[in-house]
Image (tube, rainbow, N blue to C red; front, side, top):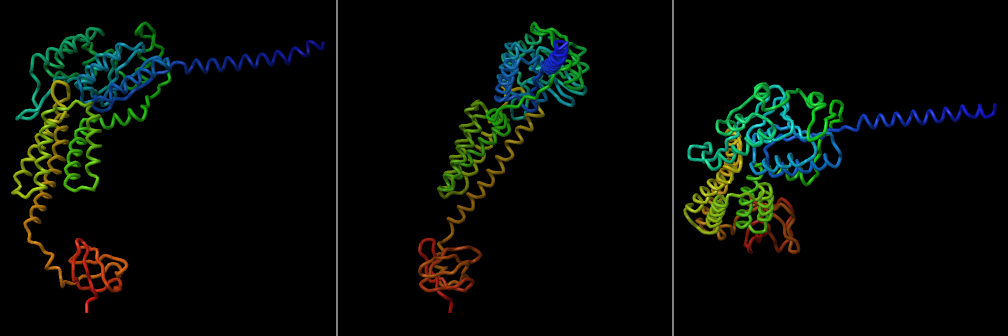
Length: 434
């Protein structure tokens, strides 16, 4: 009887431990399937391929069920696009491309979407317009160089063919700037799914066989990728508008620094140029950079030598033209014409505004140079003390609305009228006005 009584507590304890363990295992099983989501909501830049590479590494090491890239982009760099597609092909993690609600994956975004293992779009979204554009006298015009277009078409078609997608669209999205909405893309076999959200998409793709594994995503935990600080910073300065502006502002900073030594503007200018170069991936149009350097040199020459403003005007023109060709366009970048025009406007406008301000400053400097010296006319004029002035301590006085440092051989209180009796470099010599 004693053994029987002892058995009951042991049995209950064993049952509780088993039950607790089963609950823990089921809880672990419920959160075992995870999906990592990376949002691309800007241009495809040198930072984009770094972000995607880092996210893919996390997805591989963390044994994520799938990796989702949401694309809402006007396009971007062709080289970065090709790097991203190659990274998608090389990873063992299934990669799903998704255009979120009210989004668009134009140009480079379309190519990336077609390069994913599963492609999907939300309602009321658009893809297409992948023909490169360039600057000309008429504005933005399509690139029609057969060497460039044929290479890009072949790359696009082979990417689509590898994933069993519509090869005709893959060609016409470049040669004819063709666009499709979500319903058309599904009908023509450009994408595989339409979904209102990522959870909806995960429920639909559940059970799909991708890269040798059956997806179990119906109840998967959805995690958003958070980039490390250095990649987040690179993402910010890689924006084509910001990186181009950093280069332009940096050059202006150097001009101001050389013309006004000691202000530190040249140091800030150098920092801005370095950040701009990093942001562009050091992909700089050499001719554009040369024009900008010539323009900067002419403005510096105008600041340091008297003239009629010819150097300043020529410098401004060189800066504007150089900034225009500094815009990341051409065969290496595929943006929509609308975004291209916005890019040009956003870069050229501040260049012109700052340049005009600089030319105005040059004009004022030249105007001052032409004036006759006025040191002699100061003697005998009246000023008013702002500080107490004494033989031991100089102070400030107000003279014709300007603040001047002053000294005196006598004690003079604050807010007293004084007479200017001399000038030693930048310091006035004063005495109490009788």
